[in-house]
Image (cartoon, one colour):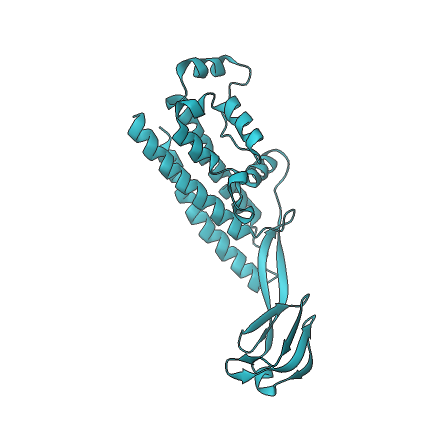
Length: 247
């Protein structure tokens, strides 16, 4: 089985994500920092994708019945890929093409794979289709770029209110940390009105930065962490099933 290869890939990813996080933090603190980040992100994503592809090979070899496996191997589309799809229809078609008869052969493994799919996730946690899109583009077109995104923030009352320069917040007769607020509005980073001077003394402006993918504006680190955690859980659960039922 490819279990050991999957474990090694995931271990590498855990090391890479620490490196990526450190590089991002340095670059956000110093915009002139020119360390290259994209190749490390690219390698991370390819490792995640490879772990899934290795698992698909084991499922094909151990779970898929011999007649279906033989027919697939003799067909023009003999290569086996990990099935994915944004919708149920696309996913089922991908399973049929790559792991024929999987659902009837082992519904537990079928469900395990299906639970990774975008349509099974809350919107903010969907990752698989975009991850595969990124790895496909990185291999065949160009590196997916990520960009430094910085927001100007204003914190009032020691963090009781935090808003960015694009928002408008109105405060009236409130109390923050035991301090009466006064009546004021924060608009585009400016305080307008009668803010209590005691509250004003606990007000400051700062910048909050993150790296996002240019096309979707998704936070890079959060996306990588989600991808890694989901794939790590999947492979752990898959190989427990394979070792229990098929080895």
